[in-house]
Image (tube, rainbow, N blue to C red; front, side, top):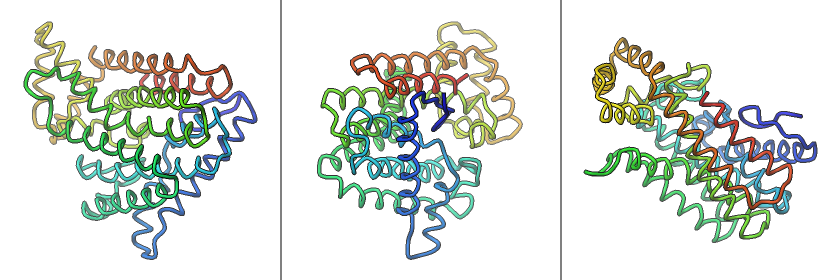
Length: 336
């Protein structure tokens, strides 16, 4: 058993491991090439997060999905680069919106330079992704455009909040489907599509990517509360400080509505207060880390990862399918 990709994913087949490793290495080269500019400062800013590393979760999914067709087809690596560039671009923008100081264990672009540089660098990455995408054909352009629309819609829904009468958890799941699920779904779709896999397989891997993406973000919600910065690569409790209600907070609010316990009400009131104060923020994190709402958010993660695993049932048994199943387990493991 060998280890490849994010979270220590194990790949049992040597040929599959070699294909995936070679593909990810080619993606890394492609990312560096795509982020070069004739202007040295743009290159430095655009490669800031590329060189910081990252899980390369989306390119890995492209490589595994491609195993259900021709894994050496010419569009596979460029499509993986497109997906990762798009993801990186959203990180530059997210850090501005969240006023984040740390990303992937290094200073965020907005804290190293300023918000304008971070936003414009994200735009530069979107432009480079579009340039590569244009060579992959009109269907690829359409798929990416639809996913990007969903991604932005998810971000807007998060900013606007649920409309009156809408269940906050249902609203949040729509947000996650757009913000995270849509692009990870594209990773599964591009890998299968570019490899020439059967349309049924393309559909299965698209659905798998969407559900796994939601589980992935739910695991991130848990990590934002439960981990330290060395584990997550960013400052713990960033969403709490910004007043963004992630799943642990939403589950706490549900519990308040259902049970009305004094300690739950007190914690909910603390979370609704000004958490830019460091002492108050630290207290909120410490109390939420030992609260049943965090365990409920973990169970939510497990449920979506199991949904993703069930989606794979129609696929033929092979090492690539086994790796996709294990990826579900790895996402759950991140959430503890």
